[in-house]
Length: 112
Length: 114
Image (cartoon, rainbow over all chains, first blue to last red; front, side, top):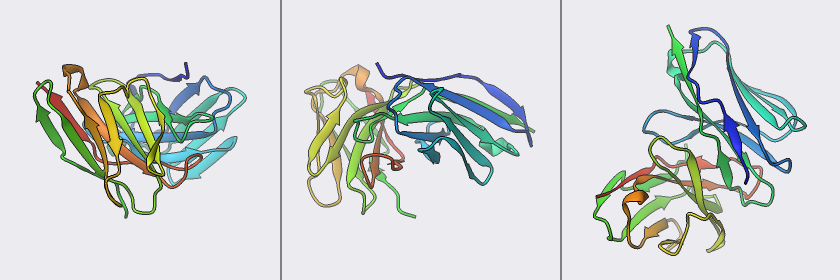
């Protein structure tokens, strides 16, 4: 059974701080890793994707991938109240036609 | 910016009735997907579709479910005889390639079975 695990939170950070969200996955053959943001009652919105080990930065967001540890993380710098949402880690497993397995999500609360 | 569009946004149906959920994927995308999310739970994969056939389906996607691309733009999910436990948000998604490419989600259809 392929699994994607996330801490459900809530993760509470003050405005302007760095929020760190973590995810682990079970299948070593996984090839693609995505972070989606989901506001309550809305659809998942793609924020970042990463395919290779290391860091990938896009604006205030940095995704980090460590395939040896089967670990992927998302850092949000200068957190804003509008970043308050549930962050979903999704993994594309080997042999699956871009079938994504989602974690349960981490709820982030950024307080002013 | 291109987006995946879904209709209707909310559908209420009686148990045992058939429903069809509609999606228009992004125009240059070739791979289409349905996911669902029961309230308070994970987003779950249902089915992927490529070249007018199902490429992969989950255990959830049993005989009461079917998908179709009836024309060049629409992609539909049919639930033949709805059950109370089918109540969920249903998301359509599309991507350009099968692997190592981003999947973009529509805004979802909230299905309520009463």
